[in-house]
Image (cartoon, rainbow, N blue to C red; front, side):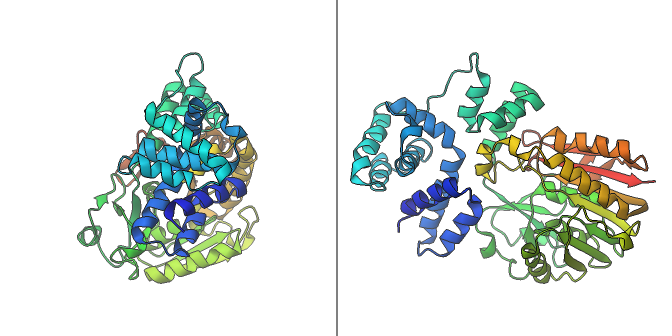
Length: 429
């Protein structure tokens, strides 16, 4: 199977079955016999077409008398692949992009796919709707984000800020951020052994790199783990110290527990809970690779109380389940998710936070975080919590080099070099 054939199959599968793109792609590439170069091409096509789906469909409608919605998924996917290569991949010759795309469909659709792609070569260039009287539609097509999500962002941030945020998501570099295991090596020493790493702007333990993580120096030796800078800053906000007792209420895949254990110099205790038992091996295997021994994973619904732990934890982290709209750059399939599907989340998040606060001892720290950027899951939830729990108050803090004087911060990709993220730090009287 060629990289384009695999991309064609995967794109249809993800769109039809609502699968997680990264998991489907990783599984397919690992089980394929493609060369490293072809795997990179396949991944670039799958992520690129997913990220630009609405923009590409707008071009199909411009170049054809047929609406994209009237096409069968195979032909539509082949057209998206062809147009993505013609518009966004300048190293691929047009004839190769066209011929390879035509070969992906049967004889019945091949003439149509060929005609549309050749029509683009006669009239090249990205065409976008004027902003005019419908700026929401303009933003949706320009940045390839579903209309319901654009409307919700505009309601929260206004037209201008929404465009700034969406542009930042589109322009985010395809880098992977590592958190250095300072139990074993310093950031400076690891940076000397990695290809062109960039130190993170705020976090004192992060390095951004390109390439496959598992092939990097130090992976097998446990010298680092993958963790976005925003997540690293959440660990800094929690501020775990050696010898303390920490509770990580929604812990999987474990990066915040790992970061806290490293801050604690592997001394103390971390109780790492998660609702899903099948995810706990991720924590166990990650801790083993990193040489961490103080994490105790267990299955637990964050809303169910553990009375024997009431007021015994020095610090409690609630990185609650959320809509995930802060990670559009890494999970482009979320661009097309209707935010209305997440309407029940704020109450679930608040219930987890209200249970978790019981474990915090007097003078202890409670941190609430999400990887979304909508107020009802973030600052509005904190306001509701503080109204019900006057024994807690917001606590100004520094997350690495980032000052947070209000005690909470929404990280947005147009102003911070991170995923979209929310952190609030509170102290119990």
